[in-house]
Length: 279
Image (cartoon, rainbow, N blue to C red):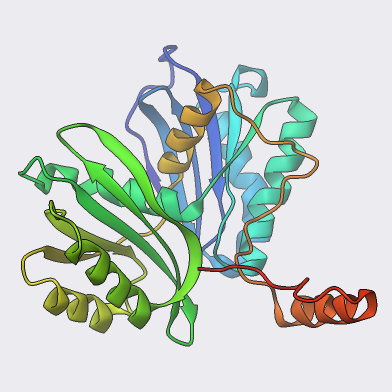
């Protein structure tokens, strides 16, 4: 387990947000007050997320001297990602939001992955032109959970370009190259960030498809503070999710769920009831 402390616990400026994400092998949690990270914890023990999650939350609050009533809200990584893992953070978040009577906001785990990687390396961008940030999580059989965002250090902007989905990495690289090639003003760089181990070859191929754009692969593991930072933005905009109906973004139905919906559709005579757009 690793910890990062970048702020003093006695600071009292800004709204205080507790975040939690278990969509990957990293159990990520943080306490963030405004622009200040009080504490950020990572535990790389996927099979033990269900054992450690509650104790990690208790530890965060105790070590920072925070009482639940001080929280402005709870930000939860909603996936996509590990089917079992996502449900742990969502279940804990829903329970805490209900018990503590605090607003709950769901955050795309892919967006948190991209947002964290961008802010960790944005100082290396020396031009005003935007950068495409493409977070990926391995989804097996050549597939990735992925999306795309455009970021600008000069304008301090961050906007979504593509929705979360599960895609073949080979096809996704082709699509990114095609989309970038059609633009009059191309991004200065394309950063593919996250779980690169099985997909570095496609990142390298993307670089050959985009000879006039810097393509960079950046290994990155989800951290808790980006989930909190993005959650704070939603809270400040007056947004929240219903803790009772809040569910993970599974992105792709399990085989058993697909078969169940097919049977239900056949029984009701509704064609395509089980279809879900994952692209």
